[in-house]
Image (cartoon, rainbow, N blue to C red):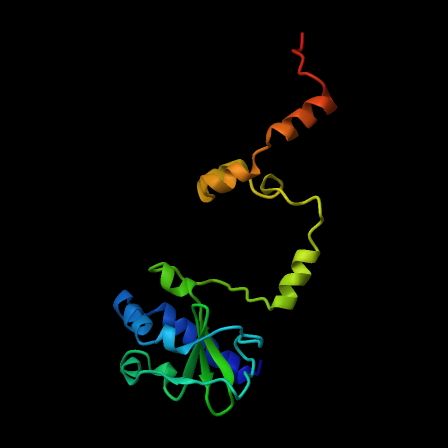
Length: 176
C-alpha cells in the first residue's frame, strides 16, 4: 500500500470514529447495499489494493459530503456487508467500512483482519487434526457467556465418549 493511500485511510478511519451516532446512521443509510453488492468476489478488496476495472462503481451520495467530506471524489461497491470506498481514477480501495462499524454504538474498531480464501485455507491447514474441540481453546466461563446452548451441547461428550473414557481409565474409585 502506498504511503499516500495509507495516510488517507488512517485519516478517514479516525474521522469515522468521531462521527456522532446520528451521522453514523446517516452515513449507513447513504449506501445502497442491495444495488451495489457484488457476489462471488475473487479479488482482493482490502485497502491499498487495485480492483479490476470491470467492477461497476457507484457514486457516493452528495448528502454525505456535508458531514463527511472525506469521501468526496470517491465511489463505492459492497462485498457482503463491507462498503469498499474506491478512487475511480485509479481503482484503488482507499477505505473499507466493515459491518462491525455499524454494530456497536461508540465501539471504536481497534484492528481488523481480512483474509483471502487462500489465506483462510493456510490457517485451517495449520491447525492440528486433534485440535477440533471447543474445550481445547476456550475456557468454560467464556463458552457459557458467549456461545449458544446448541453449540455447547455439540461439544459435550456423548454416551460413547463417556464409555470410552470409562474403559480407558476404569471405574472411578474413592480415595481412602
